[in-house]
Length: 169
Image (tube, rainbow, N blue to C red; front, side):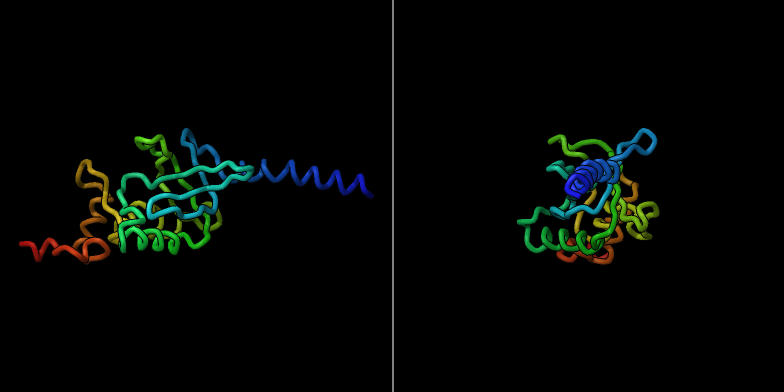
């Protein structure tokens, strides 16, 4: 009986890290994808825990979010992202790294670990549309810029402090 319990415990220990590793990191074509149920660090950073003290931080690609110390917008951005994810499965495909070498990703909230949830197919665009982030400087005309224009016109989040484009004319 004792040998059976020890063998069962050994199998559990061997199976758990491997299955956690496979669940959280995979290749999609030639893209590295980190996936799982992350912890929200701030309005633009997710932390995926892969067990055995292996963690991966992923920043939302293409956006700038107020830091947590920037009250009220930093904490609001963090809370909004937590509520959007709400303990669900998130996958982030690598879009590059920032100046600190942090993984930057295109992240989406999924149901059943495969299908993106409508409206949460791109968390970068979603957080910008809430008025809690702005697109990184770059070419105009992309989806993040369009989301920022919608947030500004509706005076959401950080845009509530500034006149809308129509009022500025």
